[in-house]
Image (cartoon, rainbow, N blue to C red; front, side):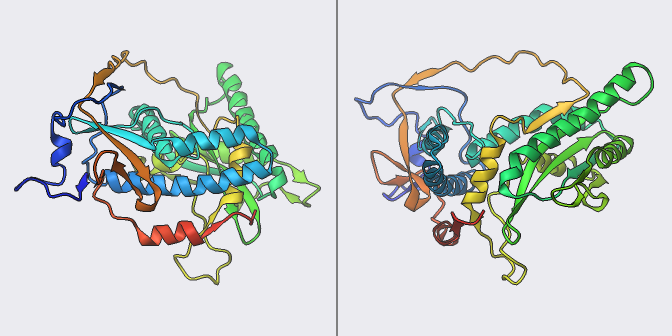
Length: 358
């Protein structure tokens, strides 16, 4: 962190200036810093933050062009809001303050925060589910024009199953279902189709079997595609072996940014970012609740005391520079993190962003 391009005092590390209580300079405008700040020297923090920002910004510029062509001004505004997210950050007494977050699902840094919040919220309950099962409920892949329709049908279908069993349980004639679920979709560039699906964690195998059975019974034959909407082999349920890993899988929150290559003949490890397809999925998800719990109530937590805002003048201001994949000090030539630009990531974001295929 804070890689200096000037020489630091003898025996001091690259974070020397960041660790000081003040810069000793005068004339800075007071800055309001809210929250506790982040421990920016934590292992992997800088690398993760730099990479997420680089990927997000490159993808957003493509998405903005697509949204403009589609005449979606409200989406353009939201995308620009994400592009500006954390463009400017501050350090004070060894901690990093990022100000307001855009909280949009196409911002990877904000998604990371959102996932961490959900994990902290639900992990205390799920850890007591000793027979927890991971369930995947999916339907036939669909073309772009049907994504939203099928997203809504997936949520509606699952809610119908949950409501039916809740009413039966209220009459003492069945099991009340509980769990957490998330809505996702992948893009298949070879077939140019989208695969909406639900991931769930439920407390036991019985619940998993009920959900799969009812899901298969719920979807009927589709005359337009001349096939059943669902097939047994595409559904999955398995015992949770590692709760942390499975919980992260469920809370991926939407769609993958990187997609497998077009066709099996491509070299292993080659990936692309299909910006237009990503845009189609994000637009189709607008207004939908991607993550939800059902059948149980979280225990009430003691009201956390809000961290008061502090007004400081001994801070450092850093601005993101895309070419460096890093933040630079606005007063002296210094990088916030020790991470050097990743040439492979730069090439990927330059040459492997596809704005046409959908």
